[in-house]
Image 1 (cartoon, one colour):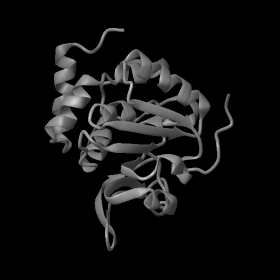
Image 2 (image 1 turned 120 degrees about the vertical axis):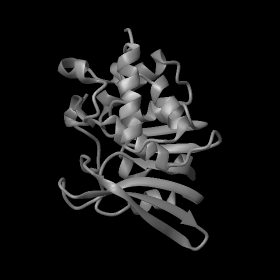
Image 3 (image 1 turned 90 degrees about the horizontal axis):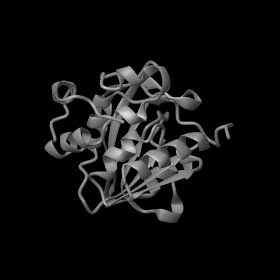
Length: 215
């Protein structure tokens, strides 16, 4: 599959910068990871627009600027072990894999995990482990994590995930009680507890417990 032409890519990156994605390493990762293969079906022609798009299992692929803002907020280093809750299309995990040492991504829909793993293999992203599971409980067997990113909205930052964050670690999570009003929160774990920053309004699908009913 051919990637976007030079002008499309330039416009894509310009739009990211105009929306507040200014970290050079994050922009480089998003230039390198083509969003096109992660968008399937009727919406393939809109892969380079800054908008969320439907994917299988009633889920969405986040708009690129939100992927960039969330990635930037994690303040990743090449040594970091990252947990992503909500694999979805796999696009966010692929961007993270360019910036971190190891990415564990957990998703309640088995079909999405299969499709994402196929793309990771095609892109030779060997530092991602994708798991079918209930992301609201995190991944205790691999904890603690340097960074945690949640791509679904919870009413509050989930306790099990906070507990799996290293001292000095950062979690980025959308928080809100309705589809209409959500806020992207950055949580830093310190020796004394947790510090919270509100970053911007967002809209995400809800964080659900249990596994998806798909094959």
